[in-house]
Length: 75
Image (cartoon, rainbow, N blue to C red; front, side):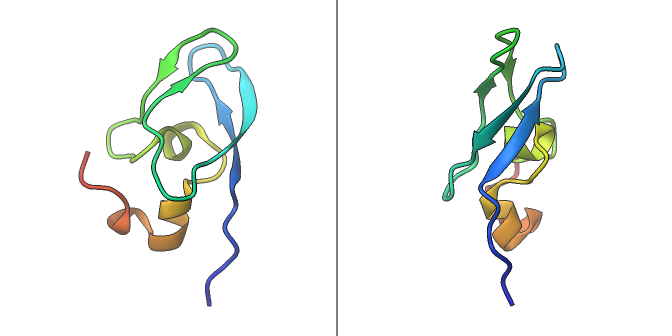
């Protein structure tokens, strides 16, 4: 019933467009990410729990497992 977790996501910086494949933490949401292209400090967009859900190609593992309703507290 449960699908295999995808643990890598490509983050795309909204400031400079730099893209980088990153490994996501399995048991937590990542609230900050420093762009390797321009150095911008990315934070989640309103309504998202983490930078992977906002700027990544794959949502974070907690969202993959539980859906958005089961992930983190309201941000």
